[in-house]
Length: 150
Image (tube, rainbow, N blue to C red; front, side):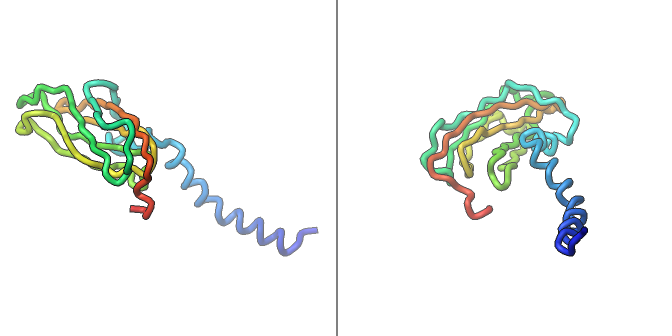
């Protein structure tokens, strides 16, 4: 015999089902979801041509030095359009996007980033021919950053 409590539990489960189904796919894909977001979905990302240089051990996740070098002649017809940094375990995983062009001279970026946890940092470079190249570096963080949700 159905009880009022069982009826309310069933009703709540049915009402919440559409929301639960939408929340899962974005988290399930992780890095692939982020790459599709940056590239627009259909682009092939190849490994190579991008070197991410950072210390393997960061004492403080609030300011981790990072250098990205992309193998490109940086001429008027063959250059790097943009470099995007991704840190999947950060609250905001798309850390930064840098726009470059032939006027930059070298495809090299020096910066500092915040890391919420020990993770792999991915640099995604888009070249002038529309191709995407990537490079990664693993960073062990001893003092975590991004704890306030920013």
